[in-house]
Length: 141
Image: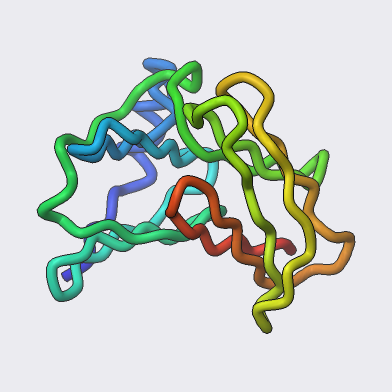
């Protein structure tokens, strides 16, 4: 089962400055997905998959709530202009690991405060970012 929102729906959300989809887990971890490029949601075998700039999945039973919010919310976002990924809402000292698609560790960075920014390589491709036990699939174009 896939969930699709019309472009008009996204325009209405953006007009209200609700430009982020927030997935809040029962463990009090929240993930943020930018609506600048509307993501695709799927439900497969008890997992909710989110595919957009950042791709990940969650056990549906672990999701407390899903809502739209202004971009000041906590979560994961990708900045194409700077070629980096920012993870907010992590504990100070949390370590983010960046991997190539073949599993090779490309680098790691510790969070200062409640956020960590990880620079992506110059090459287009698929990368994996792991932080706080969660792994995100990142597509660089």
